[in-house]
Length: 215
Image (tube, rainbow, N blue to C red; front, side):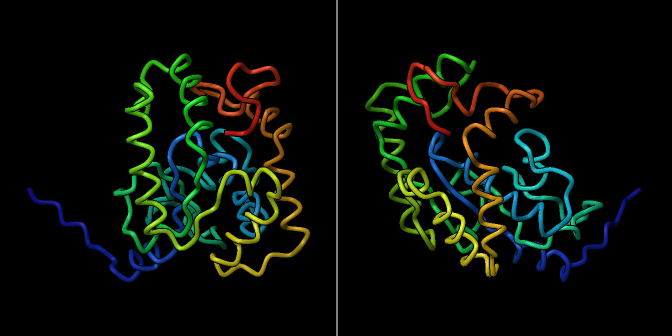
């Protein structure tokens, strides 16, 4: 017996057009950036929470909601979705590339190697550099905007404003302030401590061996 599933191409196209992909090499600020933009989505779409962990992954995850997901119509913003794979989405959907200095990425990678059973982006210094440099070159070539980690670190509101403009959102100062506070390191540490099923500490506690900033 053959099961025929009728596709709604119009709905699928609307879903595709709503993708807003934030690409980055691992340890370059994707969780931080997602958390800030997820707060905007939470406010505008009426989600109960966008806190680190399952709520964040639901509102602005490493996978977008399914086209036929029960609450897919709840999003009143683009689907802010992060990826470390440059071939996961069509280039036209990669709106932002997050870039971080190699030395900082390497230090954070060494920490991740100690905490994870498998760190696919690790290896020797030379291997990490080759992988990182190719990734950055491709990301900078295809993204609409490149945002350096240091920019977000010094002025996270600038990053929120930039993503908001790219997404066609006329953000209010209240929304921008809420997003920045949501991505504040102390808030993310608090949320991380309550999150279930995390594989390692994305946001490092004070005195961490390799870094003290949001990853």
